[in-house]
Image 1: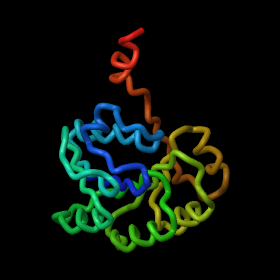
Image 2: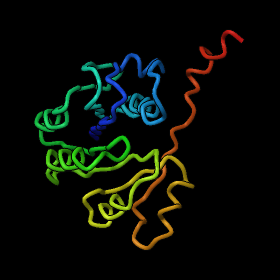
Image 3: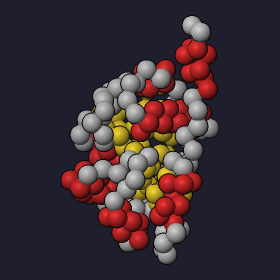
Image 4: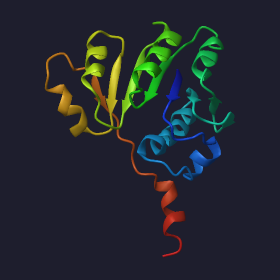
Length: 170
C-alpha cells in the first residue's frame, strides 16, 4: 500500500536522516513521523512530502517544496494510496491539498492536537475519510457525538531505540 504523508507545518525543513536519528528538535507532530520508517519496513511504499529536504532512507522517500504533494501525485503510476495529513492544516493549505488530491485518494488527518469543528464537518461530508487521534481520550472527546465513528486512535509509542543514547551518560 502507498502512504503519502503531508508535513505542511512550519517546523522544518529537516532531513530523513535527522528524523530517523531522533535529532529533529520539534514537537510530537514531527517526532511521530518516525513511524514512517516502521511502516516502510513492513513493505509499504511511504513518501513524506512538504516542508522536508529531498532524500530517501530506509524505504521512505522525502519530496520537499510547496508543490511536493502535486508532484508526488503526478508520479503515482495509478496507485494514489492514502494521503495522511500530519495535523490539520489551515484553510488555504487544506484547499491546496484537496485540489491536488481531487477526490482520487482517501485523505486521513493524523491529529495530535484538538481539531476544530470544521474537521468534524469534513469527516461527516466524507471530504476526509478518517481522523486518527494519538490517544483514546482524544478520540473519545469527539466519538460520543453521533456520526463520528470514523475517528480512530493510533499510539505513537515510545522511541525505545533512542533511550540508550539518551541515558548513556547517566
